[in-house]
Length: 334
Ligand SMILES: Nc1ncnc2c1ncn2[C@@H]1O[C@H](COP(=O)(O)OP(=O)(O)OP(=O)(O)O)[C@@H](O)[C@H]1O
Ligand SMILES: O=C(O)C[C@@H](O)[C@H](O)C(=O)CO
Image (tube, rainbow, N blue to C red; front, side, top):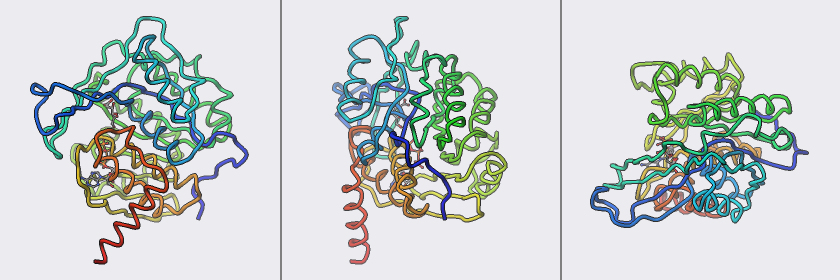
């Protein structure tokens, strides 16, 4: 069964729009930030991580975004280019905006948090006029990510990209990527998330993230089917609801349901699970795999990333994911 139809003749597999930032992950793990002295610097931001993941998996990728006019901005651009990602639509900010910094505190494998420095962040300054129509037109898939909807003008830039994607038959994926620190109110969040999600073919989020969109009060798995059906009334072909270690469930427009277990992980930090999952899953869709096989690939990629120190730099290749799945299956039968 084919759920998504990609234009085979397009030269780019994947383009993402949104946040480019820097993660500073604590080197001294299992202790609070107050006692952390050294950090390792990585490129960060959910759509950046997903694009890096997709490129590692072997897809031709480009990014649409904005970086600060300083060493941090140049670090991001150089890293993307070293990873084979086209930065022809990564614009340099000229207003003195800075790169968003995410300091990751790893108190224990299950107790991680992020301390954000995001005032006057360059990524939120992307203007709709800076989104290049010809770039979006060349892509098989566009990924949008929720944080870019939090403020103007980046919000309008995302809607501009959505408009171009619709115009050229580009499959649209939406990773809800809810980061509360960027938004001013729950109502505002729900309004813009809903407006964007209506236009998307694939919607991926955690139960909590869908609750924010739908303004549900509780976090109950029985709502998953109701959520999916709501989006099938719009453009969605596939809706995926992630439940952390409990795995994930995908609903498809034909009424089918697909479940994926998580793999047993040696967790260093939980951040990056969702990004690796999205890269792995969407890669499978681009390969023409079944939903189940794509979910398994995403879950394995997530397990590899949460067992590592970074979100972006730890993104695995397709061979690594395959080897990991085979090894896990061998261990399971032992
Ligand atoms: N503790 C864990 N052990 C093994 N796999 C996990 C664990 N947590 C998450 N995963 C895997 O990653 C996938 C996505 O994780 P999750 O549902 O936590 O998304 P998320 O909240 O978007 O992640 P993030 O922490 O990056 O924001 C899950 O479906 C699962 O396969
Ligand atoms: O911006 C954040 O909230 C953190 C990111 O920089 C981090 O790389 C991430 O998005 C992990 O999902």
